[in-house]
Length: 316
Image (tube, rainbow, N blue to C red; front, side, top):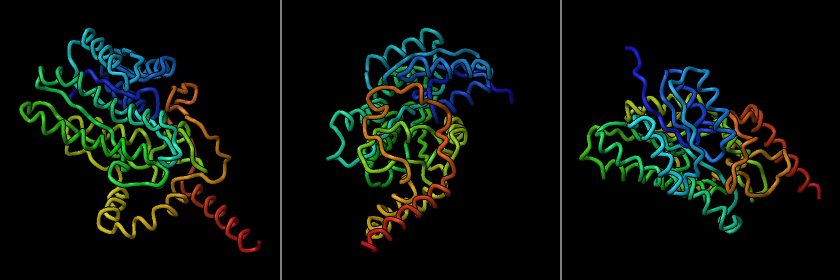
């Protein structure tokens, strides 16, 4: 059947999964409302979406952690279109470092963007969806919303909160059966979020194997908007890791730190500590992909670094 143009609002649309979702919706002829902090990066995505066939594109520079800005963006979308069909809560930032290592403003900003931002979005789009008794609200969570990982306390806490928000929205809106709520939990994805992350640890983050493409996750998002049961974990590896976390916690807790260091970090480049894009948008580094190379080669390099370090300790 031919696709009827929908109004699709995407947060975090200037990069990675959000950009991929916007591009996919554009290619099927939807009206787009794009939210992110950086206007220049959003304008680049908007131009690409127009070229791909979007029915229209509305750019709304927005910090989702600021309730008034979210209100303004939703108001602008309703003024333009009079309805919302699909709302994707995707905006997210990452910080590496233990709780005691992260500056308070960085920890709080991760929560503000990832969790409070999703709450702010829900606060302003729910009245629209409830009045329509129609539409979809998709929350992009993470595998880390189901497990714990070393040096990622702020992100883990925020994504556990997003998963709780998803369930709460379903419970609170059962009186509007026309609204669909969906939740997507990717694992490693080839986006710039790892290189843009705040870092107060001793190594650089990278997407862990197996690495999904942002287009693959975007396809799941738009599929789940129509069929919420098609949401959930993206990738079979997620379910294996979750099983270990729940069923074998004593094994998981012992293995997660050394495995994370090999699989989800890059031990080769020098670490530049600082807030990354958590406090301010680094628009010039935004893009569809992270381009950090093969995850398997990254693991092999990490093993080599650890082996050399171990040999150096033995010879001392």
